Amino acid sequence: MYVWEAYIELEKVLESLKERGIGHVVISGNPGLGKSWFAIYMLIGKVAAAQEAPSETATKKQRPPDIAGRPKADDFDYPMPVGREYQQTVKRSFTLGGIGLHSGDFASVRVRPAFAGEGKYFVRVPFGTLQRGGSPEVENEIIVHERLRAMSAEDEDTTVRRFIEFLSAQDEGYEGSYEEWHWDTYGSEALTAAVRRLNRPKPEPEQPVGPRPSEGVLQASLDNVVEGQHMLTSLSSGNIHVHSVESLLSALECCGVDNARIEIEGGEEVPVVDGSAMGWAINIVVVGLQPAHAAGDNTAEPQPRRAHKPSEVVTVQEGDAFVSFYPGDVLKVTCGVDCSAAPIIGKQWYSWVPDVDEHYRWIIAPARTFYTSLEEVYELRSRGLIKGGTIGAALIAYGSDWYEEGIVRFYDDEPARHKIVDLTGDLALLSENGNRSLPIGHIIAHNADHALHVKFAKALREACSADDMVDVQPPPEEEEPST
Image 1 (cartoon, rainbow, N blue to C red):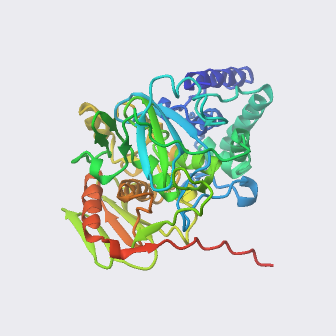
Image 2: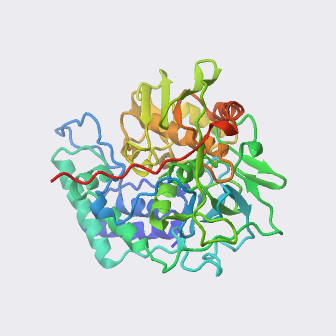
Image 3: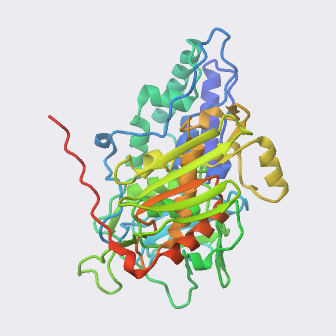
């Protein structure tokens, strides 16, 4: 099912609502989300993110809850993918397509297993390889953006019934969005069911396919970064160019994918999905990980995974913006944002310690990109940027409020969390030979953009040496529940 077909399904739901006496419904959707299954699920699930104003008697809710969609482990069925002491790659391929945020062009991206030591690299593939249902050489591939089930009569009845329940809750004073109400009322039920429907297990893990002699390869490396880009990170080598790589690379790095063949067809920009890294992270969770072996040898022990542990402080600064590294024994990433022009953003910080905190998929990946005002959006559009952006693909500050509060996932600190997505995605370009890119120690960034991230990454690379490479330790085991 394509995106526009999903909207047809939405129109059917609207007709059903009208037949039941609901005369005014506004759909808030985002074609810039592309053909991600999660995007379609959210579009169908929230049939009306913007409603008529609630009655004056409604009680004002001080702040909406954080709704990143966090089912309990027992309900989810999928182990969370994490980095290990050996190199890993994806267990199966997955394809995700959508619109590029800045170019507005449609592209399909397929992430496939790769051999140990290959790292992450991009390959252009001929038109029709991905956008016509995948390649026959990839058996049981998960194509999450092409074939989604049409809404059944039972699903439609459930959607209509729940939406009517939501309207009743509004009459009683509830002021949150449909997404918030659905999470408060039904929790992870619908999300878990949607993920399970897409799980088509394959008997054996998919084997990697290395670069072919006839195709050009664009390594995800600092050596291929296009300099001076503040709003996005682009890679270029020869006649291969790929833009906006940060969210995809962040998800791969933070979910433990050290090696990956990334095929792209159509436009040159990685799809924006919903403005966050969640679409990529969910796909990685669904397909799972497998140990990465050297080319031609899948019987030996997996290749060890190593990381730099620098012993000196590294800092780059431009005005009040800076990125610093401080030596330490654990990886910690901290990002701060200071935006006095938008009080809803203000001053905020967020820290993430992968070995201690909740998984990236729950507390970092869902954070959307953001803009400080509508004026900034108009200015960027006038410069030929964000051609594929719509409200649902980003948070837009509107003074002391968000322009569309219903899509906010982390009310207190979503911009700071998204900065961690940007920073880890840019630092993923430090990886060499399939080793971990993020150094052991504390990385702190404040008001930094992509250009400063890249400048810092190059300074950090200069400060690193072969002598400070250490073996990555196994992830801490989950504690058994107390009895």
